[in-house]
Length: 295
Image (cartoon, rainbow, N blue to C red; front, top):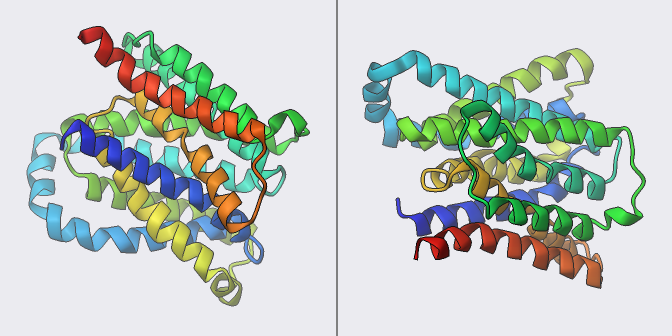
């Protein structure tokens, strides 16, 4: 896959994630956050698993012969990171505003290069840091956070941002050696669905009628976001390292704002527009400055 296709995959998956924020929020009108995630990610698993069986069965057999233990360790870490990131974000939406959740989630952008440096001692290109600053400032303006009240749920979002960071990092690590995006996507969604179901059965009411009332939110968040968007993320990270990938994924806030304007008739003010501009500049800096330096 070329760098251009990886960029397209990153943008498409980010667009899907951004537009899913609305479904995540409205999808909990009748059911709890863990029930929502359990059904959402199981639907995602059902969407991806048949494709993995058709297109990657032989590659899985060959890859697992090389180092089965390393593959399973990484894919479990990816699944647990995704579970913790999505669960904390989903629960936090019960205790904080969407704007707060969107702003604090973007903290994974500065977290990724720091964690990569600490874990793997990898040198980070200098262009990442001004790009990170632009993205965080963009998120601040985009979510109107300056008018927000900090709530207890915001702590959950920040902790969740750490696990979104590890999810991006471990995804980048596994794709270096295992070209199995559909299989990795299917396994991680099954892990999230299973863990969410276990907790949901203990702490929430698992009522089929209530789940069916949220079917449209679940289908969108499940098939497109929980399923295909996370597979697109894996395709994207084949040619984009974790730190620049995190910056591109910060466009999720831009797409979420556009979706809210288009679908919910929310008004965009000048600060929101500057926020979008800052994030776009951050993405462009992260992609173009390393190329310009080479030339």
